[in-house]
Image 1 (cartoon, rainbow, N blue to C red):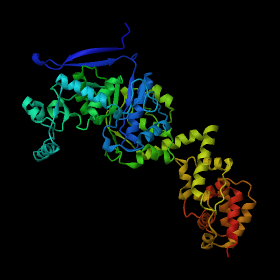
Image 2 (cartoon, one colour; image 1 turned 180 degrees about the vertical axis):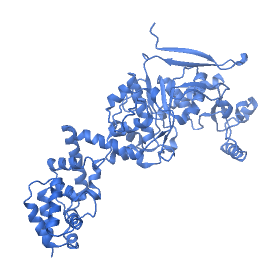
Image 3 (spheres, one colour; image 1 turned 180 degrees about the horizontal axis):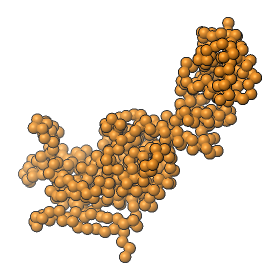
Image 4 (spheres, one colour; image 1 turned 90 degrees about the horizontal axis):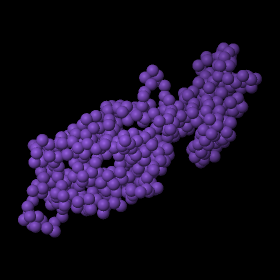
Length: 518
């Protein structure tokens, strides 16, 4: 028998008068897996949101399933213009493609919640009719008094379910008043099997008041909208942040009230900084767009994120950084290997992943051509207004620079940082005139270097030491003088390295400028 799912009825109460059942749905590997990434358009996609998007994608594609993008924009006060477009652009750059969503639609659209309001209102009426929900007329002032009272008594703020017990007379007195719709929480074991955390239970009715599911403005809250949409879009697995785990028992009660089977749930552990604080979207430098603009490769971000949260067999015998293509990550993903503990995100290690990808790029013809093109654009944008700079943007020169710098930089943007500007900028005449050096020594050194054919780091090191000895100059002083003249830097790469990367012709040209100090 080829079964795609099995449904078990689990009794949650021993009270015969109030026997309650929770339908739990289990899918076999042959089932049609459908997952969704459902962000709110309240700002830019950050590292935490990307982790959720990526793990949903890996799970769906590793099971041959469908991946859906749904925009949860029911909190209209927080919606940011352009956020949806930026989100889709970021995900496309990361290589994450959706089977269904706002831009490519699908059989269960629309995929923007603000366009599904009639459906939520219809479902709410269904709960009202079945006695699972009720109208709440409590004012914001009364709710605020409840919150203050809870703070005074040092208890957790919760709604006292006052409107749940309104009789017909009370309802008639409130007719015409503003109201919201609340869902009736019932006592239950509230357990479910979390695919990451295992058996999890929370009797939500014992610790919370009845939640609002439809606001007075006609917009649903997250609790109603995500349950209705997940059911209507036939979502089989919900992978989301662990901060939603306490609400899952509540959502299962909603599924039960509708008579629906809930999906499988997997909650992803909290992402934390190295100091133990929560990774926050308020950290502007961890947005995907910021990484993109700062020269981070999408492949580096992919592999960095999975190195923090698990989901793969880890090679514990080496600390080397390896970059795996997205196709390999899909084939090797195992949801049972996701860490259940909070995941420390060592942001300072991202550079190692980016450097590893840069090496991969420079090892292929296409990647090398693409990288030199990117470097060329960076240089043009950086020095376009500096008329004194004559840039050598030939492919050979740029390849030479990249080959020299590969073990020194983590992304190509660093090549315009102060320590490497000597590659592109020559010391000005005024800067050279302000330097303290012996012009006769410079002239001697220039003529000496003209006759050197082996312009390599090792040979130049030997040549310069012999020159300092034969001319009775302290070697360190010679190096300091030479560094200033040819680079304008007081510190940075070794002098021999600077000379090699500039090339013999350029070094001689820069020494020539110092020989006419007036």
